[in-house]
Amino acid sequence: MEFNVPSLELPFFANLLLLLVLARFFGEIMERFKQPAMIGEILAGVLLGPTILNFIHRTEELKVISELGVFLLVIIAGLEINLDEIIKSMKGRNIVISVLAFFIPILAGFFVGRHFDLDVMSTIFIGLCVAITALPVSIRILMDLGKLNSPVGQKIISVAIFDDVIALTILGILLDIKDVEQTFFNITNATLLTLLKLSSFLILVIVTYRIIRNVSKEENFIENKLNKIISVLKGKESLFAVFFVFILIFATITESIGLHFIIGAFFASMLISKELVGEKHLNTFHNTTNSMAMGFLAPIFFAGIGLEFQFSSIQNYPLLFAIIIVSFLSKIIGGYVGGRFARLDHKVSLALGFGLNARGIMELVIANIAYKAGIINTEIFSILVIMGLITTLATPFLLKRSFKSIDNKKDHLS
Image (cartoon, rainbow, N blue to C red; front, side, top):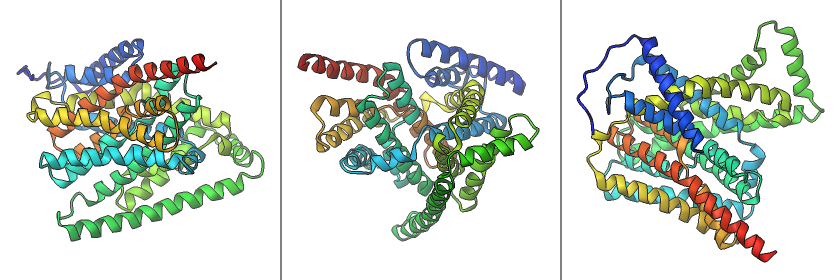
């Protein structure tokens, strides 16, 4: 329900202060209940925005801060990814899990869009949001349950990595063809051109990865070179600047060829691993980035989503319920069927499906990007925000019960 409360015109920094304090306060409450802070941060934006109190609106300055928040969140997601894990997820039976856990949900989301006669771009994008798994959220939930390094936990992570990479690749294509006249011929041509650009960029990433790996065969070579560069540079946080320059180069390349900057930032941050730059340097960069993102920029970004969220814009309640139900069922079924095809037992396959169900950060990031790009309208954006929150809230409970069932079975067998 949207209340007609008069808008207060506060100065920019007063808005920023109010938004940050309330976002962190609600985020802290959520964390105490073992839920991701982003849920509280979004609720802070909903409370302060047009939906309830109407104190703050999304200004251009807040949008710029949100963009920086997106940039850092994507970097953090990339740093969590080990390229060797991607290769592992594409080998043997693991590829079956990864493919089914992504393509069953994307097709299910696509059919929902077609059933409700949505336009092609909105339909494809709903499928994409249904198919994605939020890697950072999955990692956090598994860590809280003490199952991150378990065999099931590692399978969830490797499949989530595959899902995120494929989802961001498809997002790049959607953003590139959004302004094309919606005919089969034009969309096909634009898609092929985008795939060509994307393939060229991926070749650059692979070549860079190979060069780095070859150079780093000499023990600690890159780490030693970084130490020399940092010793020459007198400015504070020089290491942070060096890594950011590397990531910004890739982000600039993707923007220059017409793809979104997060594609370049994501793949560049994936190249930065402890094997290549040393554990100490990686931890320093990760901690600094994490502090900037989670302490300031990310709360403003998620609160900004709350400001954009408009419950009153949702008129099509059957579409809302259909997307929520399909999101749950298709992801759990995709993970379960993939697990069974990979010859995992019933309980493990079910845990896999539950673990992949959280959308959270990545789904909200790409939903926000698509909304700003005009691919989806306010109603679909608000529906996708609700879907992301509900699936993220439900996953820890479902996964905890599933792991308990697996542990009880092990105890019984022993």
